Length: 139
Image 1 (cartoon, rainbow, N blue to C red):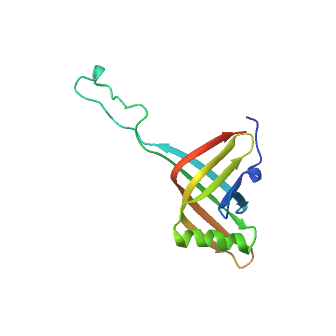
Image 2: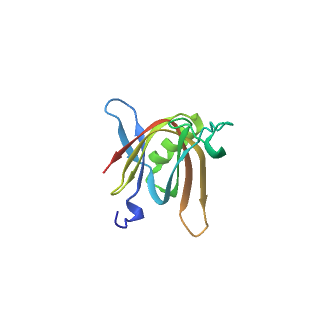
Image 3: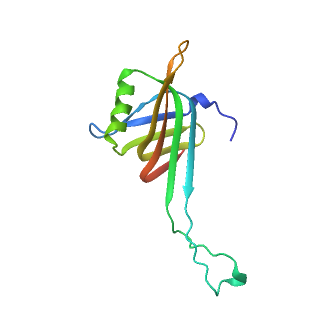
């Protein structure tokens, strides 16, 4: 994969007003990160070959987290994200990474922060945690 512009990574919030679901870009993100994790299940016992650890394939818990910071696109987008946070709902989100793919599924906002300097714009940062099965669509 060739180098990509970070500004082309998009975080979008789903709008489930009716089928088909549409997604709205959250804002002008300046930094974005996607992290996949999986827990392993240790099934090592006294009969394990050479006493090496053995893991149970296909078991464990998979999680994903997304974090980002930037500026909101408009007051409506700000209000949507704020509402999702205070209601602690599991809304559908999309993270689009150019020349890689799209990760989509239910996430809950774990952290939402606002900040700003006296000589600059107001910014936000948020952290999302997966709250269900995710899909990945390669581009």
